[in-house]
Image (cartoon, rainbow, N blue to C red; front, side, top):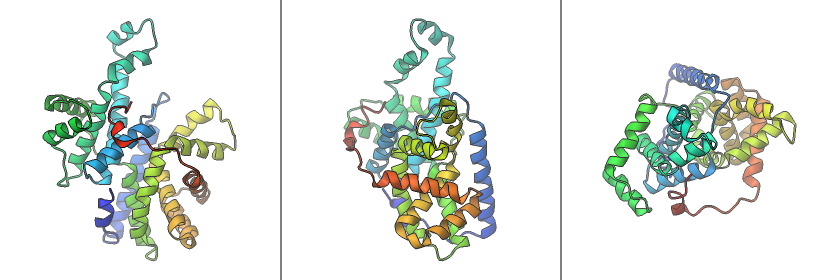
Length: 310
């Protein structure tokens, strides 16, 4: 699953281009944080991410495809659920029960197909040769016990494209990590960014799968409160969606694991590059490392994921 890491080349981009790219990515990150609603819903739960990583690995796709698929699914599901909840027909049907139950009944059978379609769309956006055709998609889905036709996949793809207004090029966490490593390698040539990149894949995947627990610990560390209030949790949503923070946190953890002697230097440089305080980076590093070294729970059997995703 680390095919991209072996082919990614650093230190070949001019400094002015890196600066422009960093400014643009930071702007997009802030716009995303400012657009979060109070009723924000997160669909990046462990089982869904596990399923997408499984698909990416089984289909021999670039790791970037998986992270992009997670973002497409998140954006689509928020839009799709919003449309369903505001539908007059649905509101009438749910008169005797909670709207959320009615919505769940409506989408639960389609959700695995939505997940796979987002992976398929993401594979097309990467512009590599490993694009999932509908023929290959149907064959793979049949192999994991899902009977889906080419027409169903086409309808699912069109539904997602329309819901997102055909705007699919959204930065994902790995995008931020790649650019930050580019800038880090340009500013500090002695930092082994090539080796850090390989390790960052593992750290990012760990954080993605253990996301809820990691950010809950970070919230408690930040607020110095063992039982944060609802208001504190609502305000903390912007932290969980801050991909610039996630990027520096993952790189800092990878540096601590690979070369602890370089850690302080890298943290200081990441703080300089992003404007995020060194203390915030240290706190995030501590929380992630704490979760990495704790005993892990048994993994879900891979082929069970597609039929029990939601």
